[in-house]
Length: 386
Image (cartoon, rainbow, N blue to C red):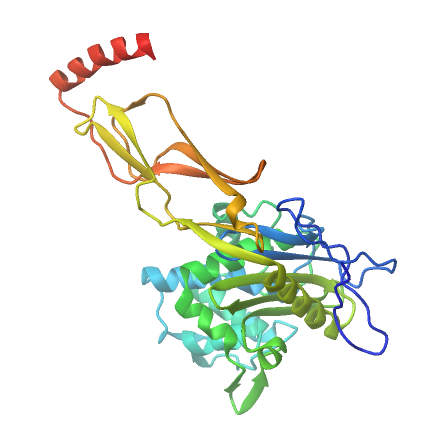
């Protein structure tokens, strides 16, 4: 399928989208020219399904895309009450001297956390980023440890950070897949903070700087997320757009020209919205199956999912979606809330699309000794016939 990225007089095409979903997913045209990107990836926000990628799991230099992880850690500190939006941060000499893009804060000055967040998220200021890291953790080095710990918690297996702004370093890297996972978590966990990424400009110290994400001006459905650039990383962009009830996340890394990252990102988003659809299968915290639990204060244990379960498939193929649940054959109390006791598998035709843990929706404490004794007897006879 010929999928035109742009309509410039020389007209070039998107390279090698590789759908991870069903084999019938549409595949854009594969040209015979060298790639203008290091890699890219397209993910559906609701389901987390990857719709297209090139070197999606390969480690690459992220440049200022790093600031999404910096932001995530700062937002957690805000949510926990460790820091506050109106805190006044004293700008250290280290923050002031940090090279690259700047918010232009002055050494020794007092700047609010909110202004620093605007400086980091809108202006991509490296000085603002280091100042926030120092305010949260006392030093940038300690803050970087928090970044790596958070990456592990989010399941980002191809990422490692050595600094907060994203300055070049051989041991500082992310994959396009990890970036999409992080962006999805950021939108889900901190929607009020995510709104900042759609702000078009910010003025501080009488210096107004525009948001570098051009898609905010050219596509009304785009509301984020972050650009990045260094000589070694090339031009990078994480974009996200919502049309009707569907949100997509696009990642383009290592583009050779600035406009390439925008053209490619727009093409990825258009491709996803044109050829795929998402369907909700189950609500969060709603029983999907009920299992027998032995030796507990309750005899039944409702199982479900902690987040709404969606599936993304090529348009028109939703009727081919099926689900199968597998539950642990013998469940013995106590059971903790959110403890996994099975899986729910989603298939499109005969191909597995996703596998999600079935978890306990409530706690079931252990029963008294008499109840445990009775259930032990019943379980013995039950096991003989099952």
